[in-house]
Image 1 (cartoon, protein in one colour):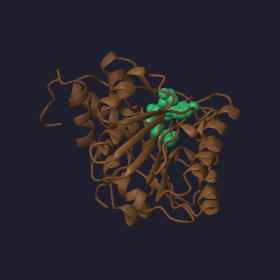
Image 2 (cartoon, helix red, strand yellow):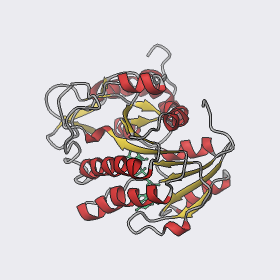
Image 3 (cartoon, rainbow, N blue to C red):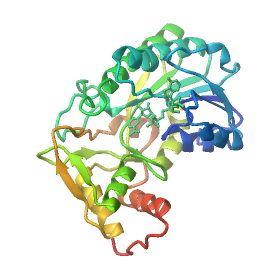
Image 4 (cartoon, rainbow, N blue to C red):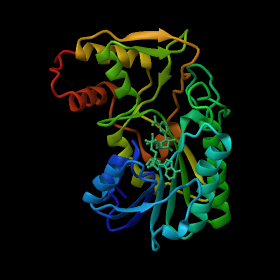
Length: 306
Ligand SMILES: NC(=O)c1ccc[n+]([C@@H]2O[C@H](COP(=O)([O-])OP(=O)(O)OC[C@H]3O[C@@H](n4cnc5c(N)ncnc54)[C@H](OP(=O)(O)O)[C@@H]3O)[C@@H](O)[C@H]2O)c1
């Protein structure tokens, strides 16, 4: 299943940073239904202009009758960042169960989780069995706990409804879009400091949107009962300090790093299970980030030698 063709696919969170390029690609060969609250009205129009059918859905209080029928696959890329635990758990976890119940007959369900579910453990490459914890509390107080809860809801729903499910724990996404590394790029261009934890470098496994798009069909193919859970990450482990230094070299400005206790901890991951299941990611970080700079700042002449 290199590519999905002629399928009916629902994507939850269709206007999001991760979902937007995925939905664009899927809509070229499939009937794609994009669901969100559509707080950004322009994003709705942009999707519709690409042939995506839109459906307004608020996962805080979902009206499932609005969702289309006869669907082959569901891809959940929605996330709510409420500071209230009751709201975050309802939208991110409980409503996921309602949606999986509604779509119990589909061929496969992809739930996007996060490597922010792991308990911080320095530069240790996280494996799927490693302890979970409140990783992102410093910046997003409800995020890790509601993502952990959502995984359990997805696993239970897979068993209850015999619904093939894959739970993909995404690391740091980036590409030709606004993402954490592109925010760092803007900080460097504006001479603003980038916050990191004190001590050893903060390492991650960033994944380019080209790999994310290519791997969606492969992840759906890996869906199973009981649910498959795997890390979803790029091919390299790299620190924020190193990618910011590289971005600085590309644009000819220094990256200013500021140490603070209020920064996210390292989450590099072990990709053994992912590589065995869907194959490795292909876009290496220097090439991917160079392309990110070129697409967001075409006016900057990039040095050939860096
Ligand atoms: N971005 C990262 O660095 C990162 C890292 C690891 C994992 N992830 C995971 O990747 C997935 C996508 O994240 P993202 O960064 O692309 O998120 P995002 O840019 O914040 O987009 C979230 C999407 O969900 C929709 N949404 C939010 N609240 C909703 C609600 N109550 N009802 C219905 N839709 C709602 C949003 O549209 P409306 O607001 O219009 O409803 C939007 O379409 C999530 O599972 C996230 O946990 C992201």
